[in-house]
Image (tube, rainbow over all chains, first blue to last red; front, side, top):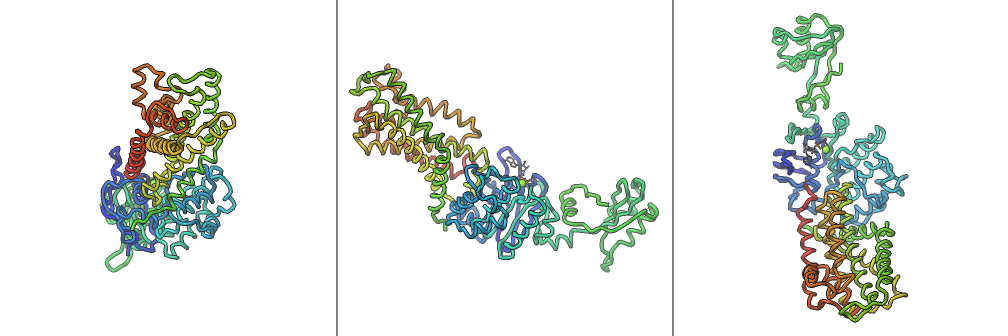
Length: 313
Length: 256
Ligand SMILES: Nc1ncnc2c1ncn2[C@@H]1O[C@H](COP(=O)(O)OP(=O)(O)OP(=O)(O)O)[C@@H](O)[C@H]1O
Ligand SMILES: [Mg+2]
Protein backbone atom coordinates (compact mmCIF):
# COMPACT_ATOMS: atom_id res chain seq x y z
CA UNK A 1 0.00 0.00 0.00
CA UNK A 2 1.06 3.56 -0.63
CA UNK A 3 1.53 5.99 2.20
CA UNK A 4 0.91 8.78 -0.26
CA UNK A 5 -0.54 8.66 -3.75
CA UNK A 6 -0.49 11.92 -5.70
CA UNK A 7 -2.37 12.20 -8.98
CA UNK A 8 -2.15 15.01 -11.50
CA UNK A 9 -1.27 17.66 -8.95
CA UNK A 10 -0.77 21.12 -10.37
CA UNK A 11 -0.10 24.55 -8.98
CA UNK A 12 -0.18 27.89 -10.70
CA UNK A 13 0.66 30.78 -8.37
CA UNK A 14 -1.39 33.96 -8.59
CA UNK A 15 1.43 35.68 -10.48
CA UNK A 16 1.18 33.03 -13.21
CA UNK A 17 4.18 30.95 -12.11
CA UNK A 18 3.56 27.31 -12.94
CA UNK A 19 5.22 25.54 -10.02
CA UNK A 20 3.74 22.07 -10.53
CA UNK A 21 2.46 20.57 -13.75
CA UNK A 22 0.46 17.34 -13.58
CA UNK A 23 2.62 15.70 -10.93
CA UNK A 24 1.86 12.08 -10.07
CA UNK A 25 3.87 10.25 -7.45
CA UNK A 26 3.49 7.23 -5.27
CA UNK A 27 5.33 7.03 -1.97
CA UNK A 28 5.29 3.42 -0.72
CA UNK A 29 4.46 2.83 2.91
CA UNK A 30 7.62 2.41 4.98
CA UNK A 31 9.87 3.88 2.30
CA UNK A 32 12.63 6.43 2.70
CA UNK A 33 11.79 8.63 -0.25
CA UNK A 34 13.97 11.33 -1.77
CA UNK A 35 12.24 14.13 -3.66
CA UNK A 36 15.00 15.82 -5.60
CA UNK A 37 15.16 18.71 -7.98
CA UNK A 38 17.12 21.89 -8.69
CA UNK A 39 16.23 25.21 -7.04
CA UNK A 40 12.76 26.27 -8.06
CA UNK A 41 11.75 22.80 -9.28
CA UNK A 42 8.59 22.83 -7.18
CA UNK A 43 9.59 20.62 -4.25
CA UNK A 44 8.52 23.03 -1.54
CA UNK A 45 5.34 23.84 -3.39
CA UNK A 46 4.45 20.14 -3.42
CA UNK A 47 5.26 19.78 0.27
CA UNK A 48 3.35 22.93 1.19
CA UNK A 49 0.28 21.65 -0.60
CA UNK A 50 0.52 18.46 1.45
CA UNK A 51 0.96 20.59 4.58
CA UNK A 52 -2.05 22.77 3.67
CA UNK A 53 -0.15 26.04 3.57
CA UNK A 54 -0.51 26.36 -0.20
CA UNK A 55 -3.69 25.61 -2.18
CA UNK A 56 -3.44 23.20 -5.10
CA UNK A 57 -4.77 24.36 -8.45
CA UNK A 58 -5.77 20.85 -9.51
CA UNK A 59 -5.24 17.17 -8.90
CA UNK A 60 -5.87 14.80 -6.05
CA UNK A 61 -3.96 12.98 -3.33
CA UNK A 62 -4.61 10.08 -1.03
CA UNK A 63 -2.86 9.64 2.27
CA UNK A 64 -3.01 6.18 3.84
CA UNK A 65 -6.00 5.58 1.61
CA UNK A 66 -7.93 8.67 2.67
CA UNK A 67 -8.66 11.64 0.45
CA UNK A 68 -6.14 14.28 1.53
CA UNK A 69 -8.33 17.24 0.61
CA UNK A 70 -11.62 15.84 1.93
CA UNK A 71 -10.25 14.44 5.20
CA UNK A 72 -7.80 17.25 5.90
CA UNK A 73 -7.79 17.17 9.65
CA UNK A 74 -7.48 13.40 9.90
CA UNK A 75 -4.64 13.53 7.36
CA UNK A 76 -2.86 16.36 9.17
CA UNK A 77 -2.55 14.18 12.25
CA UNK A 78 -0.73 11.53 10.20
CA UNK A 79 1.83 13.96 8.76
CA UNK A 80 4.72 15.78 10.39
CA UNK A 81 6.21 18.48 8.20
CA UNK A 82 9.56 20.20 8.59
CA UNK A 83 9.14 23.36 6.49
CA UNK A 84 12.03 24.83 4.55
CA UNK A 85 11.80 28.20 6.27
CA UNK A 86 12.77 28.30 9.93
CA UNK A 87 10.37 30.36 12.05
CA UNK A 88 9.54 30.29 15.73
CA UNK A 89 7.39 32.17 18.11
CA UNK A 90 9.88 34.40 19.95
CA UNK A 91 7.80 34.21 23.12
CA UNK A 92 8.51 30.57 23.84
CA UNK A 93 11.29 28.15 24.80
CA UNK A 94 11.94 24.93 22.85
CA UNK A 95 10.11 22.86 25.43
CA UNK A 96 7.11 25.18 25.30
CA UNK A 97 7.15 25.11 21.50
CA UNK A 98 6.95 21.31 21.57
CA UNK A 99 4.21 21.26 24.21
CA UNK A 100 2.15 23.78 22.23
CA UNK A 101 2.56 21.84 18.99
CA UNK A 102 1.43 18.68 20.76
CA UNK A 103 -1.63 20.48 22.02
CA UNK A 104 -2.48 21.96 18.62
CA UNK A 105 -2.43 18.43 17.23
CA UNK A 106 -4.95 17.47 19.89
CA UNK A 107 -2.79 15.37 22.15
CA UNK A 108 -1.58 15.83 25.67
CA UNK A 109 2.17 16.56 25.60
CA UNK A 110 4.00 13.27 26.09
CA UNK A 111 6.89 14.40 28.26
CA UNK A 112 8.88 11.20 27.86
CA UNK A 113 8.69 11.46 24.07
CA UNK A 114 9.53 15.18 24.15
CA UNK A 115 12.56 14.43 26.32
CA UNK A 116 13.57 11.71 23.91
CA UNK A 117 13.27 14.05 20.92
CA UNK A 118 15.22 16.80 22.65
CA UNK A 119 17.88 14.27 23.54
CA UNK A 120 18.13 12.72 20.09
CA UNK A 121 18.21 16.09 18.39
CA UNK A 122 20.78 17.30 20.90
CA UNK A 123 18.73 20.16 22.23
CA UNK A 124 18.51 19.13 25.88
CA UNK A 125 21.10 21.71 26.90
CA UNK A 126 19.05 24.47 25.30
CA UNK A 127 15.50 23.73 26.50
CA UNK A 128 15.34 26.74 28.77
CA UNK A 129 16.53 29.24 26.17
CA UNK A 130 14.25 31.50 24.24
CA UNK A 131 14.01 30.34 20.62
CA UNK A 132 15.63 33.62 19.59
CA UNK A 133 18.79 32.59 21.42
CA UNK A 134 19.24 29.36 19.45
CA UNK A 135 21.75 29.09 16.62
CA UNK A 136 20.57 28.42 13.07
CA UNK A 137 21.40 24.71 13.25
CA UNK A 138 19.67 24.37 16.62
CA UNK A 139 16.54 26.01 15.28
CA UNK A 140 16.42 23.63 12.37
CA UNK A 141 16.74 20.67 14.74
CA UNK A 142 13.93 22.10 16.85
CA UNK A 143 11.89 22.28 13.68
CA UNK A 144 12.50 18.55 13.20
CA UNK A 145 11.50 17.83 16.80
CA UNK A 146 8.36 19.88 16.28
CA UNK A 147 7.38 17.81 13.26
CA UNK A 148 7.82 14.58 15.21
CA UNK A 149 6.12 15.57 18.44
CA UNK A 150 2.73 14.08 17.53
CA UNK A 151 4.31 10.82 16.30
CA UNK A 152 3.28 11.09 12.64
CA UNK A 153 3.21 8.07 10.34
CA UNK A 154 4.57 10.12 7.43
CA UNK A 155 7.38 12.57 8.06
CA UNK A 156 8.04 15.15 5.36
CA UNK A 157 11.31 17.04 5.58
CA UNK A 158 12.02 20.02 3.34
CA UNK A 159 15.78 20.41 3.47
CA UNK A 160 16.13 19.49 7.12
CA UNK A 161 19.91 19.53 7.03
CA UNK A 162 20.52 22.91 5.40
CA UNK A 163 22.90 24.71 7.73
CA UNK A 164 23.47 21.69 9.99
CA UNK A 165 27.11 20.67 10.43
CA UNK A 166 28.43 17.35 9.10
CA UNK A 167 28.62 15.59 12.44
CA UNK A 168 25.08 16.50 13.45
CA UNK A 169 23.79 15.79 9.98
CA UNK A 170 25.05 12.23 10.26
CA UNK A 171 23.41 11.80 13.64
CA UNK A 172 20.18 13.35 12.41
CA UNK A 173 20.07 10.92 9.50
CA UNK A 174 20.83 8.09 11.91
CA UNK A 175 17.76 9.08 13.89
CA UNK A 176 15.65 9.25 10.73
CA UNK A 177 16.84 5.77 9.81
CA UNK A 178 15.71 4.46 13.16
CA UNK A 179 12.30 6.03 12.74
CA UNK A 180 12.08 4.55 9.28
CA UNK A 181 13.10 1.12 10.55
CA UNK A 182 10.33 1.41 13.13
CA UNK A 183 7.79 1.86 10.32
CA UNK A 184 7.62 5.63 9.72
CA UNK A 185 7.52 6.62 6.07
CA UNK A 186 9.94 9.42 5.30
CA UNK A 187 9.82 11.86 2.41
CA UNK A 188 12.63 14.34 2.16
CA UNK A 189 14.16 16.93 -0.07
CA UNK A 190 17.81 17.76 0.09
CA UNK A 191 20.54 19.18 -2.08
CA UNK A 192 23.08 16.77 -0.53
CA UNK A 193 22.68 14.12 -3.20
CA UNK A 194 25.31 11.79 -1.79
CA UNK A 195 23.31 11.63 1.42
CA UNK A 196 20.10 10.99 -0.47
CA UNK A 197 21.74 8.20 -2.41
CA UNK A 198 23.01 6.57 0.74
CA UNK A 199 19.82 6.94 2.78
CA UNK A 200 16.88 6.64 0.48
CA UNK A 201 15.38 3.56 -1.10
CA UNK A 202 13.13 5.51 -3.48
CA UNK A 203 13.77 8.60 -5.50
CA UNK A 204 11.81 11.05 -7.59
CA UNK A 205 13.44 13.84 -9.54
CA UNK A 206 11.35 16.81 -10.53
CA UNK A 207 12.37 19.71 -12.71
CA UNK A 208 10.36 22.77 -13.66
CA UNK A 209 7.29 21.32 -12.00
CA UNK A 210 7.36 18.01 -13.84
CA UNK A 211 8.37 14.55 -12.72
CA UNK A 212 11.50 13.52 -14.62
CA UNK A 213 11.78 10.09 -13.05
CA UNK A 214 10.40 8.24 -10.05
CA UNK A 215 11.56 4.76 -9.11
CA UNK A 216 13.39 2.69 -6.52
CA UNK A 217 16.88 4.07 -5.98
CA UNK A 218 18.52 0.76 -6.94
CA UNK A 219 16.65 0.63 -10.26
CA UNK A 220 17.59 4.18 -11.11
CA UNK A 221 21.23 3.57 -10.40
CA UNK A 222 21.21 0.35 -12.37
CA UNK A 223 19.24 1.49 -15.37
CA UNK A 224 20.00 5.16 -15.75
CA UNK A 225 23.42 5.55 -14.21
CA UNK A 226 26.20 4.67 -16.58
CA UNK A 227 29.96 4.48 -16.53
CA UNK A 228 32.42 6.81 -18.18
CA UNK A 229 35.85 6.34 -19.57
CA UNK A 230 37.93 9.43 -19.11
CA UNK A 231 41.23 9.93 -20.90
CA UNK A 232 43.59 12.74 -20.10
CA UNK A 233 45.80 14.42 -22.65
CA UNK A 234 47.86 17.40 -21.58
CA UNK A 235 46.38 19.51 -24.32
CA UNK A 236 42.84 20.67 -25.02
CA UNK A 237 41.08 18.53 -27.61
CA UNK A 238 38.50 19.50 -30.12
CA UNK A 239 36.17 17.19 -31.95
CA UNK A 240 36.32 17.25 -35.73
CA UNK A 241 33.33 15.94 -37.64
CA UNK A 242 35.23 12.72 -38.28
CA UNK A 243 35.99 12.34 -34.55
CA UNK A 244 32.35 12.78 -33.66
CA UNK A 245 31.34 10.25 -36.24
CA UNK A 246 33.88 7.67 -35.12
CA UNK A 247 33.02 8.06 -31.44
CA UNK A 248 29.30 8.61 -31.83
CA UNK A 249 28.34 5.47 -29.87
CA UNK A 250 30.11 6.86 -26.83
CA UNK A 251 28.60 10.36 -26.75
CA UNK A 252 32.04 12.00 -26.58
CA UNK A 253 32.60 15.23 -24.67
CA UNK A 254 35.89 17.05 -24.69
CA UNK A 255 37.35 19.41 -22.16
CA UNK A 256 40.59 21.32 -21.59
CA UNK A 257 42.20 18.21 -20.25
CA UNK A 258 40.88 15.43 -22.40
CA UNK A 259 37.90 13.42 -23.50
CA UNK A 260 35.12 11.58 -21.74
CA UNK A 261 33.22 8.66 -23.27
CA UNK A 262 30.03 7.04 -22.05
CA UNK A 263 30.27 3.29 -21.68
CA UNK A 264 27.51 0.80 -22.22
CA UNK A 265 27.00 -2.92 -22.45
CA UNK A 266 27.17 -5.11 -25.54
CA UNK A 267 24.46 -7.64 -26.23
CA UNK A 268 26.48 -10.34 -24.54
CA UNK A 269 26.70 -8.20 -21.42
CA UNK A 270 30.31 -7.25 -21.96
CA UNK A 271 31.31 -3.63 -21.31
CA UNK A 272 32.10 -1.42 -24.29
CA UNK A 273 35.22 -0.26 -22.47
CA UNK A 274 37.64 -1.92 -24.83
CA UNK A 275 36.10 -0.62 -28.06
CA UNK A 276 35.78 2.87 -26.60
CA UNK A 277 39.40 2.96 -25.54
CA UNK A 278 40.62 1.69 -28.89
CA UNK A 279 38.48 4.17 -30.80
CA UNK A 280 39.76 7.11 -28.75
CA UNK A 281 43.38 6.05 -29.11
CA UNK A 282 42.84 5.73 -32.86
CA UNK A 283 41.69 9.38 -32.97
CA UNK A 284 43.86 11.13 -30.36
CA UNK A 285 46.73 8.76 -29.62
CA UNK A 286 47.56 7.14 -26.28
CA UNK A 287 46.45 9.19 -23.25
CA UNK A 288 48.64 10.45 -20.42
CA UNK A 289 46.28 8.94 -17.93
CA UNK A 290 42.92 7.16 -18.07
CA UNK A 291 40.26 5.63 -15.86
CA UNK A 292 36.67 4.58 -15.51
CA UNK A 293 34.16 6.34 -13.34
CA UNK A 294 30.63 5.22 -12.52
CA UNK A 295 27.92 7.83 -12.32
CA UNK A 296 26.55 8.49 -8.91
CA UNK A 297 23.18 9.99 -8.10
CA UNK A 298 24.56 13.48 -8.54
CA UNK A 299 25.65 12.73 -12.10
CA UNK A 300 22.33 11.14 -12.96
CA UNK A 301 20.55 14.08 -11.41
CA UNK A 302 22.54 16.58 -13.39
CA UNK A 303 22.11 14.66 -16.59
CA UNK A 304 18.37 14.26 -16.13
CA UNK A 305 17.91 17.88 -15.21
CA UNK A 306 19.98 18.80 -18.27
CA UNK A 307 22.86 20.45 -16.51
CA UNK A 308 26.47 20.04 -17.60
CA UNK A 309 28.05 16.94 -16.22
CA UNK A 310 30.70 17.99 -13.78
CA UNK A 311 34.08 16.66 -14.66
CA UNK A 312 35.75 15.11 -11.67
CA UNK A 313 38.88 14.03 -13.48
CA UNK B 1 -14.00 11.01 10.41
CA UNK B 2 -13.17 14.60 11.34
CA UNK B 3 -13.44 14.97 15.06
CA UNK B 4 -13.41 18.13 17.07
CA UNK B 5 -10.04 19.18 18.35
CA UNK B 6 -10.99 20.82 21.62
CA UNK B 7 -7.55 20.40 23.08
CA UNK B 8 -6.08 22.10 20.04
CA UNK B 9 -8.51 24.99 20.40
CA UNK B 10 -7.72 25.28 24.11
CA UNK B 11 -3.98 25.18 23.42
CA UNK B 12 -4.26 27.99 20.90
CA UNK B 13 -6.37 30.02 23.32
CA UNK B 14 -3.80 29.55 26.08
CA UNK B 15 -0.98 30.41 23.70
CA UNK B 16 -2.68 33.67 22.78
CA UNK B 17 -3.31 34.57 26.42
CA UNK B 18 0.24 33.61 27.34
CA UNK B 19 1.52 35.85 24.57
CA UNK B 20 -0.02 39.03 25.95
CA UNK B 21 0.69 38.11 29.56
CA UNK B 22 4.38 37.79 28.73
CA UNK B 23 4.46 41.47 27.79
CA UNK B 24 1.92 42.75 30.31
CA UNK B 25 3.53 46.16 30.68
CA UNK B 26 2.70 46.82 27.08
CA UNK B 27 -0.59 44.96 26.81
CA UNK B 28 -2.28 45.68 30.14
CA UNK B 29 -0.51 48.27 32.25
CA UNK B 30 0.01 50.82 29.47
CA UNK B 31 -3.60 50.79 28.18
CA UNK B 32 -4.99 51.03 31.72
CA UNK B 33 -2.61 53.85 32.53
CA UNK B 34 -3.49 55.72 29.32
CA UNK B 35 -7.16 55.58 30.21
CA UNK B 36 -6.42 56.86 33.72
CA UNK B 37 -4.40 59.75 32.27
CA UNK B 38 -7.31 60.77 30.05
CA UNK B 39 -9.50 60.72 33.09
CA UNK B 40 -7.14 62.92 35.10
CA UNK B 41 -6.77 65.43 32.28
CA UNK B 42 -10.51 65.77 31.80
CA UNK B 43 -11.06 65.91 35.51
CA UNK B 44 -8.93 69.03 35.77
CA UNK B 45 -10.09 70.54 32.50
CA UNK B 46 -13.79 70.12 33.16
CA UNK B 47 -13.92 70.39 36.96
CA UNK B 48 -17.28 69.53 38.46
CA UNK B 49 -19.19 70.36 35.30
CA UNK B 50 -22.28 68.35 34.42
CA UNK B 51 -22.77 66.68 31.05
CA UNK B 52 -25.41 68.73 29.17
CA UNK B 53 -28.67 66.89 28.84
CA UNK B 54 -27.65 64.06 31.16
CA UNK B 55 -27.94 64.24 34.87
CA UNK B 56 -24.39 63.26 35.68
CA UNK B 57 -21.01 64.94 36.25
CA UNK B 58 -18.39 64.71 33.58
CA UNK B 59 -15.98 62.58 35.55
CA UNK B 60 -18.48 59.83 36.30
CA UNK B 61 -19.65 59.95 32.68
CA UNK B 62 -16.14 59.36 31.37
CA UNK B 63 -15.23 56.26 33.38
CA UNK B 64 -17.35 53.59 31.60
CA UNK B 65 -16.64 55.11 28.18
CA UNK B 66 -12.91 55.00 28.72
CA UNK B 67 -13.14 51.42 29.94
CA UNK B 68 -15.03 50.49 26.78
CA UNK B 69 -12.58 52.32 24.55
CA UNK B 70 -9.68 50.46 26.14
CA UNK B 71 -11.49 47.15 25.74
CA UNK B 72 -12.22 47.73 22.06
CA UNK B 73 -8.71 48.89 21.23
CA UNK B 74 -7.08 46.03 23.10
CA UNK B 75 -9.30 43.32 21.69
CA UNK B 76 -8.37 44.61 18.23
CA UNK B 77 -4.68 44.85 19.09
CA UNK B 78 -4.55 41.32 20.46
CA UNK B 79 -5.74 39.49 17.36
CA UNK B 80 -4.29 41.85 14.77
CA UNK B 81 -0.80 41.87 16.29
CA UNK B 82 -0.75 38.11 16.72
CA UNK B 83 -1.80 37.53 13.12
CA UNK B 84 0.56 40.01 11.54
CA UNK B 85 3.49 38.91 13.68
CA UNK B 86 2.78 35.31 12.71
CA UNK B 87 2.61 36.30 9.09
CA UNK B 88 5.73 38.47 8.96
CA UNK B 89 7.79 36.00 10.99
CA UNK B 90 6.41 32.99 9.13
CA UNK B 91 4.84 31.30 12.16
CA UNK B 92 1.28 31.19 10.87
CA UNK B 93 2.10 28.09 8.85
CA UNK B 94 2.01 26.08 12.08
CA UNK B 95 -1.60 27.08 12.56
CA UNK B 96 -2.42 26.15 8.98
CA UNK B 97 -0.63 22.81 9.38
CA UNK B 98 -2.40 21.90 12.62
CA UNK B 99 -5.59 19.81 12.49
CA UNK B 100 -7.78 22.69 13.64
CA UNK B 101 -11.08 23.61 12.06
CA UNK B 102 -11.62 27.24 11.10
CA UNK B 103 -14.17 27.56 13.89
CA UNK B 104 -11.71 26.27 16.49
CA UNK B 105 -9.09 28.77 15.36
CA UNK B 106 -11.54 31.69 15.39
CA UNK B 107 -13.00 30.77 18.78
CA UNK B 108 -9.53 30.51 20.33
CA UNK B 109 -8.41 33.88 18.94
CA UNK B 110 -11.61 35.68 19.90
CA UNK B 111 -11.70 34.16 23.38
CA UNK B 112 -8.16 35.40 24.00
CA UNK B 113 -9.15 38.86 22.74
CA UNK B 114 -12.09 38.89 25.15
CA UNK B 115 -9.80 37.91 28.02
CA UNK B 116 -7.35 40.69 27.22
CA UNK B 117 -10.10 43.28 26.91
CA UNK B 118 -11.61 42.14 30.19
CA UNK B 119 -8.30 42.18 32.03
CA UNK B 120 -7.55 45.71 30.82
CA UNK B 121 -11.01 46.96 31.85
CA UNK B 122 -10.84 45.25 35.24
CA UNK B 123 -7.39 46.68 35.95
CA UNK B 124 -8.56 50.17 34.92
CA UNK B 125 -11.70 50.01 37.06
CA UNK B 126 -9.91 48.47 40.05
CA UNK B 127 -7.32 51.24 40.11
CA UNK B 128 -10.10 53.84 40.06
CA UNK B 129 -12.28 52.02 42.53
CA UNK B 130 -10.97 53.73 45.69
CA UNK B 131 -11.35 57.20 44.13
CA UNK B 132 -14.51 57.04 42.08
CA UNK B 133 -17.99 55.94 42.89
CA UNK B 134 -18.50 53.25 40.27
CA UNK B 135 -22.09 52.22 40.25
CA UNK B 136 -23.37 49.14 38.46
CA UNK B 137 -26.98 49.61 37.42
CA UNK B 138 -27.43 46.76 34.93
CA UNK B 139 -24.73 44.12 35.21
CA UNK B 140 -26.13 41.96 32.41
CA UNK B 141 -25.99 44.90 29.99
CA UNK B 142 -22.40 45.60 31.00
CA UNK B 143 -21.38 41.98 30.45
CA UNK B 144 -23.26 41.61 27.19
CA UNK B 145 -21.99 44.85 25.68
CA UNK B 146 -18.45 44.20 26.92
CA UNK B 147 -18.46 40.70 25.48
CA UNK B 148 -19.97 41.68 22.15
CA UNK B 149 -17.66 44.66 21.73
CA UNK B 150 -14.61 42.48 22.43
CA UNK B 151 -15.78 39.83 20.00
CA UNK B 152 -16.44 42.38 17.25
CA UNK B 153 -13.14 44.14 17.74
CA UNK B 154 -11.22 40.89 18.15
CA UNK B 155 -12.84 39.68 14.94
CA UNK B 156 -12.00 42.88 13.09
CA UNK B 157 -8.43 42.52 14.33
CA UNK B 158 -8.29 38.98 13.01
CA UNK B 159 -9.59 40.06 9.62
CA UNK B 160 -7.22 43.06 9.51
CA UNK B 161 -4.35 40.74 10.46
CA UNK B 162 -5.23 38.33 7.67
CA UNK B 163 -5.56 41.17 5.20
CA UNK B 164 -2.36 43.01 6.15
CA UNK B 165 0.95 42.28 4.46
CA UNK B 166 3.12 44.03 7.06
CA UNK B 167 3.08 45.95 10.33
CA UNK B 168 2.56 49.17 8.41
CA UNK B 169 -0.78 47.97 7.07
CA UNK B 170 -1.92 47.21 10.59
CA UNK B 171 -0.71 50.57 11.88
CA UNK B 172 -2.72 52.17 9.08
CA UNK B 173 -5.94 50.40 10.06
CA UNK B 174 -5.35 51.06 13.75
CA UNK B 175 -4.61 54.76 13.29
CA UNK B 176 -7.09 55.64 10.57
CA UNK B 177 -10.01 53.37 11.37
CA UNK B 178 -9.94 51.94 14.86
CA UNK B 179 -8.62 54.93 16.82
CA UNK B 180 -10.95 57.54 15.25
CA UNK B 181 -14.02 55.33 15.45
CA UNK B 182 -13.43 54.39 19.08
CA UNK B 183 -12.39 57.93 20.05
CA UNK B 184 -15.48 59.36 18.43
CA UNK B 185 -17.85 56.73 19.77
CA UNK B 186 -19.19 59.06 22.42
CA UNK B 187 -16.56 58.31 25.03
CA UNK B 188 -15.87 61.99 25.71
CA UNK B 189 -19.24 63.59 24.98
CA UNK B 190 -22.93 63.01 24.84
CA UNK B 191 -24.42 63.20 21.33
CA UNK B 192 -26.83 65.79 22.65
CA UNK B 193 -23.85 68.16 22.83
CA UNK B 194 -23.22 67.82 19.10
CA UNK B 195 -24.65 69.91 16.26
CA UNK B 196 -27.31 68.15 14.19
CA UNK B 197 -24.94 67.20 11.35
CA UNK B 198 -22.42 65.62 13.66
CA UNK B 199 -25.15 63.78 15.49
CA UNK B 200 -26.03 62.06 12.20
CA UNK B 201 -22.43 61.14 11.59
CA UNK B 202 -22.14 59.89 15.12
CA UNK B 203 -25.24 57.72 14.75
CA UNK B 204 -23.61 55.99 11.79
CA UNK B 205 -20.64 54.94 13.92
CA UNK B 206 -21.35 51.37 15.04
CA UNK B 207 -19.05 51.73 18.02
CA UNK B 208 -21.20 54.54 19.38
CA UNK B 209 -23.94 52.05 20.30
CA UNK B 210 -21.47 49.82 22.08
CA UNK B 211 -20.03 52.63 24.18
CA UNK B 212 -23.41 54.10 24.92
CA UNK B 213 -24.91 50.75 25.90
CA UNK B 214 -21.95 49.88 28.08
CA UNK B 215 -22.21 53.21 29.87
CA UNK B 216 -25.92 52.67 30.36
CA UNK B 217 -25.08 49.44 32.19
CA UNK B 218 -23.10 51.42 34.75
CA UNK B 219 -24.97 54.71 35.03
CA UNK B 220 -28.44 53.88 33.79
CA UNK B 221 -28.35 56.85 31.41
CA UNK B 222 -27.46 57.18 27.76
CA UNK B 223 -28.31 58.59 24.35
CA UNK B 224 -29.77 55.37 22.97
CA UNK B 225 -31.93 52.59 24.31
CA UNK B 226 -29.52 49.68 24.86
CA UNK B 227 -32.35 47.15 25.08
CA UNK B 228 -33.49 48.15 21.61
CA UNK B 229 -29.96 47.61 20.23
CA UNK B 230 -29.37 44.24 21.87
CA UNK B 231 -30.39 42.14 18.89
CA UNK B 232 -28.33 44.27 16.53
CA UNK B 233 -25.30 44.02 18.79
CA UNK B 234 -25.62 40.25 19.17
CA UNK B 235 -26.32 39.87 15.46
CA UNK B 236 -23.26 41.93 14.52
CA UNK B 237 -21.08 39.84 16.85
CA UNK B 238 -22.32 36.63 15.22
CA UNK B 239 -21.79 38.12 11.78
CA UNK B 240 -18.21 38.96 12.76
CA UNK B 241 -17.63 35.39 13.90
CA UNK B 242 -19.11 33.97 10.71
CA UNK B 243 -16.99 36.30 8.56
CA UNK B 244 -13.81 35.29 10.39
CA UNK B 245 -14.75 31.64 10.11
CA UNK B 246 -15.36 31.92 6.38
CA UNK B 247 -12.17 33.85 5.67
CA UNK B 248 -10.05 31.43 7.68
CA UNK B 249 -11.69 28.47 6.00
CA UNK B 250 -10.78 29.67 2.53
CA UNK B 251 -7.31 30.69 3.70
CA UNK B 252 -7.92 34.29 2.65
CA UNK B 253 -4.57 36.02 2.12
CA UNK B 254 -2.97 33.25 4.15
CA UNK B 255 -2.61 30.40 1.66
CA UNK B 256 -1.20 31.11 -1.77
N1 LIG C 1 4.58 32.39 -3.30
C1 LIG C 1 4.95 32.26 -4.55
N2 LIG C 1 4.44 33.03 -5.51
C2 LIG C 1 4.80 32.89 -6.80
N3 LIG C 1 5.68 31.98 -7.22
C3 LIG C 1 6.22 31.17 -6.32
C4 LIG C 1 5.89 31.26 -4.94
N4 LIG C 1 6.58 30.32 -4.27
C5 LIG C 1 7.31 29.68 -5.19
N5 LIG C 1 7.10 30.18 -6.43
C6 LIG C 1 7.71 29.71 -7.68
O1 LIG C 1 7.36 28.36 -7.85
C7 LIG C 1 8.46 27.62 -8.37
C8 LIG C 1 8.77 26.46 -7.44
O2 LIG C 1 9.23 26.96 -6.21
P1 LIG C 1 9.54 26.01 -4.98
O3 LIG C 1 9.80 26.86 -3.80
O4 LIG C 1 8.47 25.00 -4.87
O5 LIG C 1 10.90 25.33 -5.47
P2 LIG C 1 11.87 24.30 -4.72
O6 LIG C 1 11.97 23.10 -5.57
O7 LIG C 1 11.44 24.09 -3.32
O8 LIG C 1 13.26 25.08 -4.74
P3 LIG C 1 14.44 25.16 -3.67
O9 LIG C 1 15.30 23.99 -3.90
O10 LIG C 1 15.13 26.42 -4.03
O11 LIG C 1 13.83 25.20 -2.32
C9 LIG C 1 9.59 28.62 -8.51
O12 LIG C 1 9.60 29.04 -9.84
C10 LIG C 1 9.22 29.75 -7.62
O13 LIG C 1 9.70 30.97 -8.12
MG1 LIG D 1 12.22 24.50 -1.52
